[in-house]
Length: 222
Image (cartoon, rainbow, N blue to C red; front, side):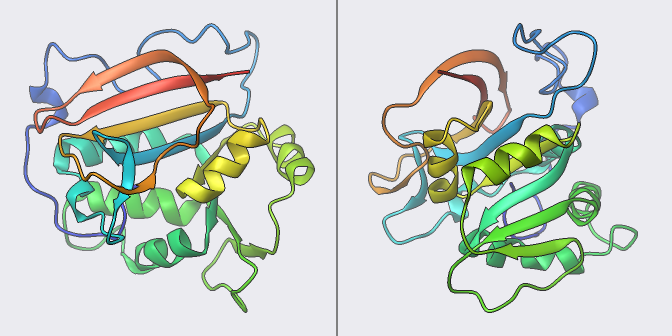
């Protein structure tokens, strides 16, 4: 997720990136996808530093702001998502996207992402929030493995889990099918880790960007 909406730094358009692998979902074939129909996946996507943190020691993550090229890639990757699962902090970070007019002014990649976010369902997991606002948004007090598994089984559109703490719980519960890391060419030394210990992954695809960001797409191994 790209965080709060802001003006992105201009970069090469997708038409100018010849020689690079195609966007996520159109690259290497995934042997785990079943033939004969769509299978909903639970995907964890994180913007991380090269040393594996989503936030630095001060809680900052401004160093992970995507440029236009990376933002366009994120948009393409998120189009399959029908439901976002997020914790309290991520919900607060993403609230401004509810007010961006997809038909208004501003960079196209920002307006495209706003349309994607606003069209999806949002489930916020928090024990402390009194309520949540915005259309297609509901509040859950606890992250229940069986209920989330039932939600996966009841839809043919992907689900996205955001926030390192919530994603760690989903990973421990064996619910996450894919991990997508956008690694930025910066080290922060300490902070909030993108992944918990003990996760085993298998590389499915990768993408390199002009800014030095690298996207790594993994299947979660049992």
